[in-house]
Length: 434
Image 1 (cartoon, rainbow, N blue to C red):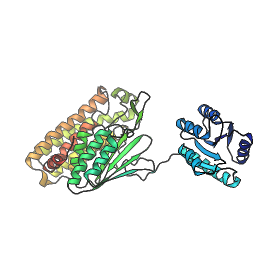
Image 2 (image 1 turned 30 degrees about the horizontal axis):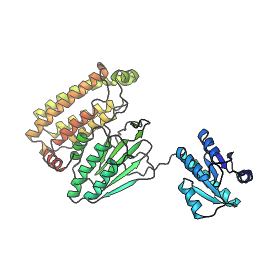
Image 3 (image 1 turned 90 degrees about the horizontal axis):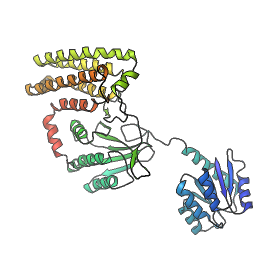
């Protein structure tokens, strides 16, 4: 740990150095006044500074302000023979963390220095908690903001906080706040209060809206695909979480974003969907870096596609849940293959969601009009999958291997909406957006 002692009297500097001699790992340097301390801090990083207040040239108050301006994490401890509140407050307001009065109690001083060192060492370690409101389950800072929304005024406060606050910079923040606001208005008008949790880590801002059980999930998912196409979200059990990449301010005043990994969707949590791919991979690049043993499995996808076409014709001739079950099992066979290929968790999620939906349809739901729509959309979906396979693994022409992810999920949602069309349309019409 690098420590700087700043005092215009050599005896005072020596006294502090003697008190520090039993502190393991301390590397000590000295400065004779505030000006020298500022210069030394610009050249080297100091963890802890003991700063005298009354010094010629540049005093401790001005030196503390200057150092904190370019090295905010440096801990500065004021040392003074002046035991008065005014001097103490001026020093603390300038950025000092503590104020010690001379003459110094040696035992108390050593204990406080050890405490300072503990705090400084903790700064280098991850400061995260996994007890987050966000459904993404990313570790976040142990600090969150909770907006309690029980009126339009409190919802407007949330709006202003994020859209009129220059410090709240994240990608697509405007789209997300507008969606939360629109859903929130509908909840308030139907007498449902809710909360919004705001959490962060180094890379991301997470906004989580609760108490959405009064709105059907399919309606919310349609809204998200329409208004937040570029923002990863999770919707589960009436809770909606967004993950937004935090933006940085560059020297030119423009914003740039942190790079983060894509969200991974697992079979254990099938509600997760990321529609944003930050690092595009071309089909040619992907095929070149994929193991030949895995590539051989791609050939089986064509066979499954052919069987899906046959099963769809069977269902068209005989609208039974047994034939739907056959379709569901074939889609799951398709997923088994693509789940072995790295990068296609999102595509697998969409297909698994559809397979589960088909498996749970009941005979009473299969009226002629809905069945006709279902077959038309399913034929189109299987055709899209076939084209995706050819473009990626045969022709290798796709500029982005993830190009089908969002549209395939949208198609799956469209199929589901056939059986909830009236309710979905009615609810969606009541939600207000900009």
